[in-house]
Length: 510
Ligand code: HEM
Image (cartoon, rainbow, N blue to C red; front, side):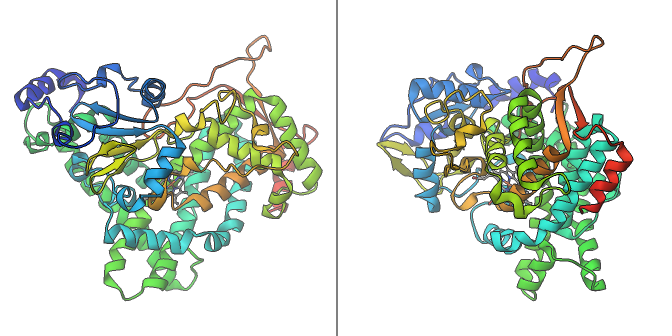
C-alpha cells in the first residue's frame, strides 16, 4: 500500500471507525494509565510526533509527563520508558512479565515471524536464545577473535585501495564477520550468497516501512483485503517476500551443512548448535531460523556503529589524536593492535563507549510487550501493551552525560583517571531479550576501531580551494538509525609509504 493510496486508507479507517483504543477501555476500573499527551480520535498522538525521529518527541514529552508515558499512535497503545531506572525496574526486575514482543499483523503477513527478534516469549524463542547463547556467550565468542582481526585487516586493505567507498567496505566487513561466525562462510567480493541475503533484507525493510506497518498493524483487518484490491499492493509484496525468505533461510544453512560434512568446518553458530542439540528435532528448525536472524540483527547494526565512529573522528580531530597517541605508545609502529592490547588502551575503550552512546543505532531498541496486567508506581500497565524504551533519551540525559551532543570519551573516566564502570548497556537492550550478539559485536567494533585508528587519519574533505568542508551530523530514520552520507577523507597516517608497501605491511600482521 503506497501513500498515493492515502485517500483509500482514510476511507477504510473511517469504515473501520475505531476511535477509542482497546487499552483505554480496558483500563477502566484500574489505576490510571501513565500520563501522556491527549490523543485525537483515529490519529492518536501521531500529529504531534516527529515521525522521522520519534525518540526526540518522546524525550520532549518526558520533560512534561515524566519517565513513563502513555501514548496512542493511530490505534496502537504504547508505553514509553524514558529513563534507565524505570526500564530496569520493569524490563529487568520484572522480566518474566516484560519479555514478550508486540504482535504485529505485518510480521505474520510478510512471513518474517520466524526471526528470533520478533518471536513471542515462549518455548521456540527460548530454543533460539539457547542456540545463540551456545555460540556467542563470552567464553565461546573469543573463538571468533582471530577471524575478527583478520576481517579488520581486510577492512584496512579495502580502505587503502578505495577510501571513498568506505561505506561499502564497512558493510562488507560486518557482513563477512556474521557470515563467518554463523555459517563458517568466507565471503568473496560481490558475493552471490550475501547479495541474495541483502536483497531479502532490503525487501523486508521495504515491506516494513513505518507508514505501512503503522497503518496495517493498527488496523489488522486490512490484511483481509484481497491482493487484487486497488491499493493492496502490500499483499502482492507479501507473497513475493515469502519465496525470497525461503532462500535466505535455506541456502546459507545448506552451505554450512556441506562444510560440516566435509570435515573442514571451523566453529560456527550452526556447527555449535548442531553439535550441542543433535538429534533433537525441535532444535533443527530453530537452528536454521535463529541463524537466518543473525545477518539482519548483526550486520547492519555493526556497520552503522562504525559509521558513527568515522563521523565522530572526522569531526573531533583532538579525540582522534589522543586515541592514536595511545595506540602508538602501547602498540608501536611495527605491528597492529590485537586483543592482547585491549586492557592497556583505556582511551580506545572510552572511544568505543562514546560511539555507542553518542548515537545509539537502535534509538528505541526493539519494543517489548507486557505478558500480564501490571501496576507500577500507581500506574496501570495493561496486558499486551507495547513497551518502547527510549535509549536515545537515556544516552542524552544531561544529568548523567553533561553536554550530551559533544563527543567526549573523557566522560568515561573517573577523577583519578581510571575507566568508570558505565558500559552504556542500554544500547544492547534489556533483561531476557538483551542482544545475544553483544559480545561478538563488541569485539568486531573494537578490532575495527583500533585497527583503523592505527593506520588512518580521518579528515574533513576539502573543497576546490582546499578549504575544509564543514557539516553537521544528520541521521537516517527508522528502527535502526545511522549517519547519513557525510564528506570525509581517509588517508594513511604513514605518508612515507605507498599503498602497495602499506598493504604488505598490513598483510604481515594478519
Ligand atoms: C552494534 C551492534 C549491535 C547493537 C547495538 C545491537 C542492539 C540490539 C538491541 C537494542 C536489541 C533488542 C534488545 C531488547 O529487545 O531489549 C538486540 C536484539 C538482538 N540482537 Fe543485537 N545488536 C548488535 C549486534 C548484534 C549481532 C552481531 C548479533 C548476532 C550475530 C545480534 C543479534 C541479536 C538478536 C538475535 C536479537 C534478538 C534477541 C531477542 O529478541 O531475544 N545483534 N540487539
